[in-house]
Image 1: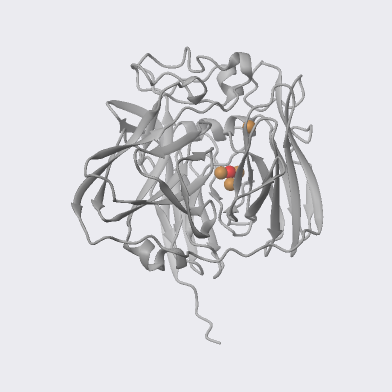
Image 2: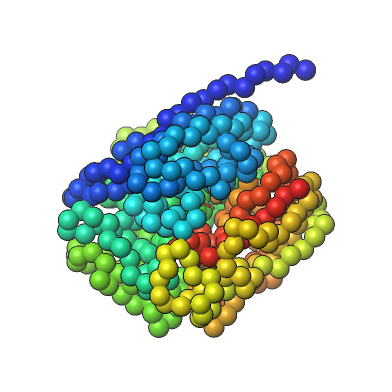
Length: 461
Ligand code: C2O
Ligand code: CU
Ligand code: CU
C-alpha cells in the first residue's frame, strides 16, 4: 500500500597505497581510505546504497560485494568493471526489502590481481542491519567484529612477492591480525553475552576458531541467521566464510584466548612443509608457518572479563530458514588441479600447475552454466584428483543451502555463499536463483586459485 522511497546511504571509498602501523611495524599496504580493515559499510534492507569509489592505485581494480543479493550488472555487483588508475566510479544499488541481515564483505575482484590486492590489505565489512539485530537477546549482546586477515611484511615494510609454490598453495602471511590488530582485547561482562561477527578476509589462510573454556553459540552463517542457536566447540572458516556466534559470560572472571587451532588444508602433500620459507624475515616462533604446518594454537584475540550484569539468556529461536523446494536441475561441478600448460593465470608463474573448474580454466568469453531464474538447482561439487587440496567454493549473487557432505546430511539448515569442499569430498548444495538476470562467477575463494583460473561464468536468465 504505502510505497516509500528508499533511504539513501552514501559512502566514499578510495583504494590507495598507504603506510599503516601493523603490530610493531610500519607496512606499505593497499587500503581503503587508509584503514585496515576498510571503513565499515552499513545499510538496511530496502536502502539505496551509493558508493563513490576512486582508484588511487597504479593498477586496475574494482569492488565486489561478497554475499549481497543485488544485480550482477551495471553499477551494482559487476565484477567485470575495470576501474583504472585515477578513475572514479559511482556504485549504486538497492538492497531488496527482504534482504537478510548479516555480515557481508567487500573486496576487489579484478581477475588476475585479486590475491595480490587482498594480500596487500584491501577488504572491509558490509553489514546489513535488520531483523536479526532486533531479536531481544541478540540486541542485548555486546557486538564485536572479528575481521581475520594475515599479512607478510618484510624488514623494509614491504609486502614480499610470493614464490611459485606459495601461489600454488595460496599465499599466507605470518602476521595474523584481527581488525588490523595483533591480539586485541574484547571485554565480556560476567552474566553478559558477546556477539562475535567473524569474517575470514584472508587471501588463503584458514581459521579453526575456538575460545578457551567457552562454547560458541552459532546464530548466523554467511548469509544470515539460522533458525535457532547451535552450540559448537569450534568453527572452521575458510576464506570468504563468515559466522556469528554468541558467547556467554558464565566462566570465572579472567582472560580467555580466542585461538586458531592447527588445521591441514592439504597443501599438496609433499609441498606442505615450511610454506612461508623465504617469505619475509623470521619474526619469532609460531609466526612463520601457515596452518598446514602449524602444530600449536595461535592466539588471535583475548576475551577479558570486566564488570558484571544481570544474567542475559541465549535466544531460544532466531529466524526461520525457508526449506527449498525440489530442484529443477542438477549439475556436477568438478574442482581439480592438473599439471600442464593450459590455464595458467595472468600471474604467469612457471610451475605448470592448472587450477580448474570442470577441467577448464577461466575464460571471460565462455559461459559455463546457464540457469533459469525462479528455479532451484542442486549442485554436486566434487573435489577430486591425486593432488586434491581443500577449496572453498563460492557463488556470487544467490546464496545456497548445503544439503550433504560425502552423503552425510548437514546437521542444520543455513544460508551460505561459500562452502568448504575438502580434499576428496563431495558437497551437495541447493541454490534458488532469484530476481536478477545477468552474468557472474563462481570460483575457489583461495584467491590465488581464482586468479590462476579456478573460476567459471554463470548466466542467469
Ligand atoms: Cu569474495 Cu568472487 O568473491
Ligand atoms: Cu563473492
Ligand atoms: Cu582452491
